[in-house]
Length: 369
Image 1: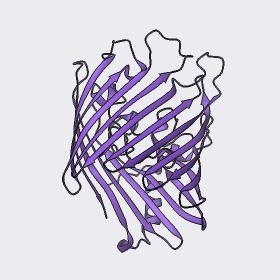
Image 2: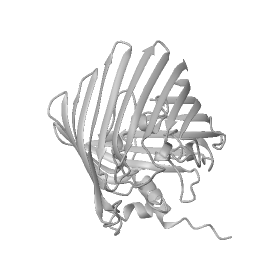
Image 3: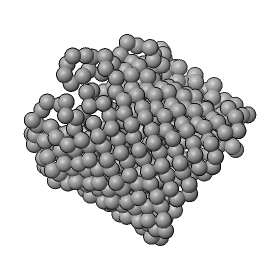
Image 4: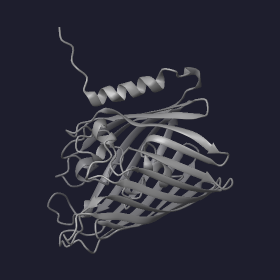
């Protein structure tokens, strides 16, 4: 009987995992993750109701002079006519782990090593999520328990690569002030046509470049301020059609504050209007927590580049409110309502209404040990 041959790119991943995990001290491992189940419905009957599910597992373990981190995630296949697929801003948790056929899978999303360069400086090397280092905040970024709308998880004007190979350096000036640099390939796992690990490591292909960003941060127990700039050097085609080798770049701000039961956060962003439709961005989020209940409200606007010549495209606006209850430690149920105006900048009314409401019920379990 012939055994099925494992594809070469998967062999590389398996080999890397074996090398990393073999000397692992199981007692020192920290685990975190969860399971999320979502049901979504839109007021436009042309958009079908959909149920999405995801699983996350983060594994951290120390070595002699640093720590390893591995992140595994998986999800089901979203409906081609469902809410998360047609209304792309509606669900930040759906479709984050898909194969080349756009079907859900279990994948290795991060594998990196962090170690100290000096008393005040550290370095991370490997496969990593750039947004986690450049665009984090206190009451957003977690689509499993906080806002589910894409505009409230990360800044859409920043052209972050998907999970990409690269490095991050962080320098702490004191307990509050820091400076971070990140350099990765312009193409992460999902940015490649085959969504394969083989393509991920081929960083010198002609259509690829680099992603570079820096962030100055000031953070206390109850406040946060981040200021940054970034550039994406892969070839971009300009809207005027005169060049297909332009670069994208931009600047951003993320800030927030917590007091008593309240917390607020805002984001600002701007990108090159010659190559990207998402030219400017502003978002404001609010959170109120009382015992086992949390209420959130948010509003955002993505301004369409004035270089886009289309009568059927216009600015995108998104609003979301949610109410979450922690039923028991680690178990949450959340109801939310979103209002989208011109989803994906589409104001044509041909595929879906230009103004649409989306209701969501989310059940999630999260753990950390």
